[in-house]
Amino acid sequence: MRKFKYALGAVALMLGLQASQAGTLDAVKQNGVLRCGVTTGFAGFSAPDAKGVWHGLDIDMCRAVAAAVFGDASKFKPVPLNSQQRFTALQSGEIDLLARNTTVTQQRDTALGAISAGVNFYDGQGFLVPRSLGVKSAKELDGASICMQTGTSNENTMADWARANNVKYKPVVIEQFNEVVNAFAAGRCDVFSTDASGLASIRISKLSSPDDYQVLPEIISKEPLGPFVRQGDDQWLNIVKWSLQALINAEELGVTSQNVDEQLKSTNPNVMRLLGVTAGSGKNMGLDEKWAYNIIKQVGNYGESFERNVGQGSPLKIQRGLNALWTNGGLMYGLPIR
Ligand SMILES: N[C@@H](CCC(=O)N[C@@H](CS)C(=O)NCC(=O)O)C(=O)O
Image: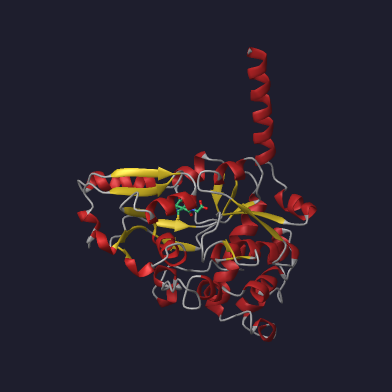
């Protein structure tokens, strides 16, 4: 029994070491595809269309990294994961990148073998209720049953907020996304609580009559969502981090999927560095100098991706709000590529 336990420990340690070792870029290249952890299907962020092709703001993160690494945004494989499964999949090496409405928290960044590579959507936790409940504010939720998904930051945030506001509630916590949505739609709980982006997506894409539901005005937390990688591979962390920064910088500089070829002639030093006309940034990460050019040409800039997937060009119609560029009063601020 004891021997067995030691053997098990040794295997776990080996797996841990393997998972935390550097060399993700080489492994991804060798596989010929980026394995990207996404949701099980969450419209606007990561969901398959009728033909089985995945789209969304988070899918564009997978596509951007695939474009940076392979020069081909299509070279990624979506790996659907529910909230509970996502960090284990990253730790075990099943995925190379987690791009799935995941909140950056100190605990996740330190204790789970994962590390954040930036924020691609600033969000906050909110509440979705049927209009028939007749509730106008979260403060009126005393005694309500609240649906949430297992393994989300939403469970703890809800408990903290309820305690602070003297609201008693009954948590209904379910592991599978579709099951929790169905429980809510069937009235097995009064309220759905998760990130506001999630509520907008659920309301539009999962409920048969969206107008029968409303999102309450209270946002009770900060939920900065973004991509994560495994700890222990700084080169790979940089590739994911700077792929996101390239999307944001392109929007700041007015470089789009439509004008990127024209912009190759730009004399603006920032554009020249972004597009690899002035070399350096690619070599520093072990990538082709056209890494960011390929991202912008195939994925577009952050604003294009936002509008197409979750903004005005999408059914969700989410306002830019906190996700506007800093020059427009938002928090999106491209770290300098130089
Ligand atoms: N941002 C929160 C919540 C993210 C989350 O997992 N939300 C659920 C509820 S909307 C979800 O995306 N589920 C989709 C799935 O499991 O496939 C977190 O990081 O814990």
